Amino acid sequence: MTSKAFIFDLDGVIVDTAKYHYFAWRKIADQLGIDFTHEHNELLKGVSRVRSLDIILELGKVDASQEDKNKWLIQKNEDYLSYLVDMDASEILPGVLPILKFLKEQNQLIALGSASKNARPILEKTGTLTFFDAIVDGNDVTNAKPDPEVFLIAAQLLNVKPENAIVFEDSVAGIQAANIGRMTSVGIGSKSTLHEAKYIFQDFTQINTSFIEDLIR
Ligand code: B16
Ligand code: MG
Image (cartoon, rainbow, N blue to C red):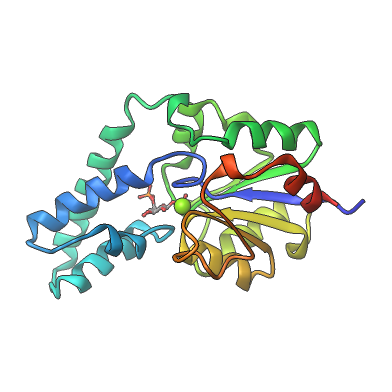
């Protein structure tokens, strides 16, 4: 049997941190008088911190110096990290742990493919670090999603061809990255937002083990 690699995004797939990113960015947007809605927030999912700030400034048509941008990036991350202080396994999204455990029982390779530079402490705090055979995060890549770099490195570390990799993603940019990388994309979220994904589920409670078995085969 050909080896498969199951690559998980972090924010919005394994843990419910997407809301904390939103709270922290909204504070910056409010400060600058920029209207920043949940819909706008979809544009930021899976996108690097630096690019996220640029998108918000573009939305508000705000020109800013590099010095101000650096200040806001630090402020956003400090605020975001303050939400993570008490983080524990209760923040793992419903249905994720049973799927991770099932993959382990089936001796499947598992990787993390996240844009976040805060990925490792989040995995540690939620007790999920040991599931992963490879971890690729925002500290390891130069090109952000929709560039497939993060997932290609993950597949390479596991010695698995991209076409044998399956990517679970909650962001449009991440689904595009998986598709561009010729991997099987599984969208976690709404059908209308993630319509480019090969398969779409509202959340992991909707994914049963026979679907995973079919992917393994
Ligand atoms: P950080 P993912 C992404 O993580 C988030 O979706 C995105 O909203 C965030 O801006 C990005 O990480 C960078 O995160 O500021 O923690 O480095 O979804 O790719 O796991
Ligand atoms: Mg995500």
